[in-house]
Image (cartoon, rainbow, N blue to C red; front, side):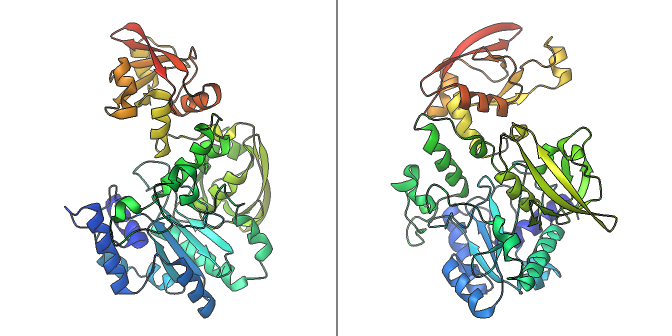
Length: 443
């Protein structure tokens, strides 16, 4: 299956929208709602009804969170999903609930990487979580993170856990996190005056919808706008296993496809072909499940027990995470990175220079060299433009620091070492000459 077909099939499976070129976002949401309600397969935007149906039937629940206005790079054909010979029969064993906005969402239960454009939960009617599905590590390329086969494996795995329930309730307890700062998104201070606890289908659908990424934005704003650094766990959310040197096969639950040499994963004893069964005692159904366990681990260092199957034998391993391990994560693909660009860079978007590019410019390896790829043009994202920055500038120093080798590293430095109102001196290389500018750290 080529990449285009895969993306069409997978995203179709998850959201089933009838998207037509030229429609406004408002029209797309309304048309999607009409189709789903007419089809009758999914319970639409009604979790209470979904849980009630699961209690009545004894089935597990699959909940898909997907904000329809977020239609980045999606072209779909509704007929494809109905013909899929594996997924459709699996979904029929669940109560299927489709959520198209996060207004009123129970954040004590539904915790996930809010920089995603969708998330899948498989649950018991009592709220016990069997597993999660859906991840990505790039803004548009999902091919190495998800697949139809991988989703089928996760759905099969959740059905197995459901059949064993409640004998396995203790081992599933860790799949549910502690309550967040507020019970639902619209209760966060930065969202409270703008949104209600439900989407407004009668009037302005799009503007009334709280998008997933706005939850993360609201959580970070609680700290930054009150003059406090954003906690490392929130700054680097849901670490992808590849930052540990662990490459997992997206067509399986969590089989090891590759282990990078001299990595945290290799030091743990993981090997290609290992089938990860549990981490920290939790059954693993997908890469998203791995990320959930990692997200609960301490940024200051941790050790996670692992049970893997290798050549038919069970192996017990320990994944030792050193202090600062989360900082290996790349923030650049995340929606949240645009807020960091506004705060710390005045709207600049930066790219790392490779070895050859540095050499051509006479810049030493291991030294800061971040190219300005984009200069914001409007409002608070145009602060750098007004200060004099230009596309193609090479930033070689930020606040007298020359060791900030990536955008993510610069963001984290700004979060820890600067405060609102600071004016940061930035050195750029332009046409072979050094130029210095100042950027204000924004609220």
